[in-house]
Amino acid sequence: MNFILKRKLKFYTKESLKFVGMITIAFGLIIGMIFIKYKPVYAVTLGNEEVGYIENKENFEKEVEKNVINYSAKNVDSVNIKDKPSYEFKLVSREEETNEKEIIIAMQKDMTIKYKYYEIALNDKVVEKVDNKEEAQNLVNQLKKDDKDLKFNIIEKITTNIEEIKTDKIEVAKTNISNKIKEQKEKESIIGEVKGIKLAVKPVEGIISSRYGVSSRIRRSTHTGLDIATSSGTPIKVVSDGTVISAQYTGSYGNLVKISHGNGVETWYAHTSKMYVSAGQKVKAGDVIAAVGSTGNSTGPHLHLEIRINGNHVNPQIYMYK
Picture (cartoon, one colour):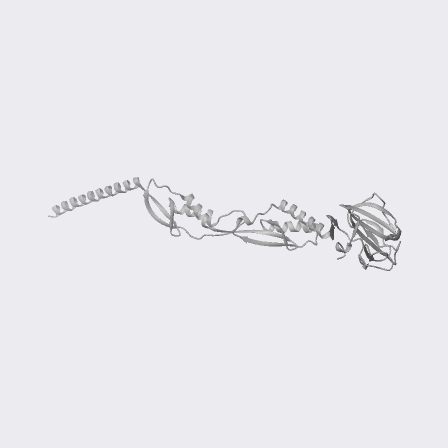
C-alpha cells in the first residue's frame, strides 16, 4: 500500500514540476516577446506635462544636479528650479527614443538664474562694472595709489537679466576709469568757457573792487572790465592757453598784457607792475605772465581784467568770479 502511495506521489510531483516548468517557459517566452517589442523607461514629468523618457533614473538625476541644480556659468549667483521632475516607470515601444538632453535643456529654460556683478562708482557715479568683488577692490586700490583723494564705492548688484551686466576685464576697466578720472579733473579745472575756449585758471584771487559796466569819476565811459583788488606784486596767471599779442605800457591801462586764445577771444591784464612775457610768446593756462600793480589810470594795486570777443569787450564775471 505504501509502495503504491509513494509511486503516485512521485508521479504527481514529476507532473507538477513539468507543469511549472512549462508555465515558466511560457512566461519567459511572453516576457521575451514583450522585451523584443518594448523597452523599460522612466517617463519624466515637469509640472503637469510629460516631457520625455529616460533610460537610467540615477544617471539622469546626476545630470540634473550637475547641469541644473548646480548650474555654473559666468556671474551666476544662484539657481531656482520652478518644477522638480517626477518619474513613472513604463514599457514603451522600442521605436520610442529617450531624450535626456532635451529634458535637461527644458529644465534649464524653466529655471530662474540670479547673476551677481560689481559696480565701481567714482564720486557716487558708476564708472565701471567687473565680475567679482576681489577684482573691484584690487582695481580701486591700484587707482588710489596714484591719488588718495579719489572717492570710490563698490556696489554689489544682483539681477536676473544677463543683458544688464556687460562687465569689462580688469585691464580694460582700469583704462576706462583712468580716462574718466582724467576727464573729471579737466572738467573740474574749467571755470568757464568763451566761444569754445575753456578758461581753466583765475588770474588772481582778491576782492572785486569795480564791476563791468559801472560808471566812475576816473573814467570817461563805463567800465570795460573787472577790477580785482589784491596786494601789489601778486602773480597774475593767464586764464587759458594762448599767444601773447603785446606786453607794453598802453596809456590809461598802464602796463598791459594782451593774450589771444583763438576763435577771436582775447584776455587783457592791465595796471601791472611787472610784465614777464613778450609779444609772440606761447603761454599755457596757469603760467605767470605779470604782477599786480597800479600803473596807468589807477587808484591802487589791482588787476583790471578784460575779455574781448572779436574786439568787443564782454563781462568777465559771466565766465569767472561768479
